[in-house]
Image (tube, helix red, strand yellow):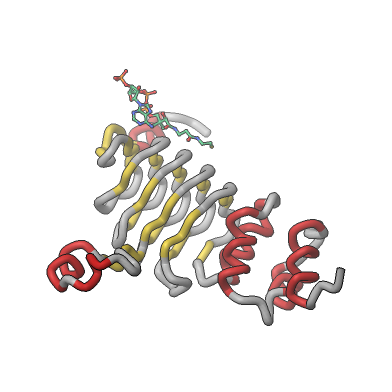
Length: 184
Ligand SMILES: CC(C)(COP(=O)(O)OP(=O)(O)OC[C@H]1O[C@@H](n2cnc3c(N)ncnc32)[C@H](O)[C@@H]1OP(=O)(O)O)[C@@H](O)C(=O)NCCC(=O)NCCS
């Protein structure tokens, strides 16, 4: 089969990723459509490569952050999501920074758009831990050192050091108290 350059590069990224640096990945994805880079980021089997591919598809990711497979970022590839350093994101998280009805007739109604089509930067500050299947809605900032329980739906900002769970997410604990009273 005659693969073109981008297909060959995509296969290299998927299967020959050991030892690939950020600069190698930048080079390999130079001519690639950002949609393909994002697809590789979501599904790649290696943590470090995933994080770098998110960086290359316009998601800000700090150092030493772990992103598990299946992170869906709704941002139309615009810089609307910032993930801090030393964060842990479990599998199948959705960060919905941009929300609208696409081609649905609903989008033709100004009042629907004004009320329900929302875009807002999502910020996850340093040292946060998000459980599996968390959903974050537009404009939400998660304060540093917060723990977000599995399947939580975040509709509002989260102060630093919070434990949050439920749909919608509610603060149910304080990490600060735990850190204050516990040795490492
Ligand atoms: C939220 C979490 C951090 C624990 O918080 P906690 O406050 O210590 O929770 P507890 O285990 O003491 O349970 C307290 C109550 O919350 C409920 N609860 C626990 N986790 C919950 C969650 N994610 N969503 C809703 N309710 C939850 C428990 O059932 C319990 O309910 P009850 O009081 O009616 O019995 C943990 O349950 C969690 O979700 N961790 C993320 C796990 C994960 O996804 N890891 C990914 C791989 S790294």
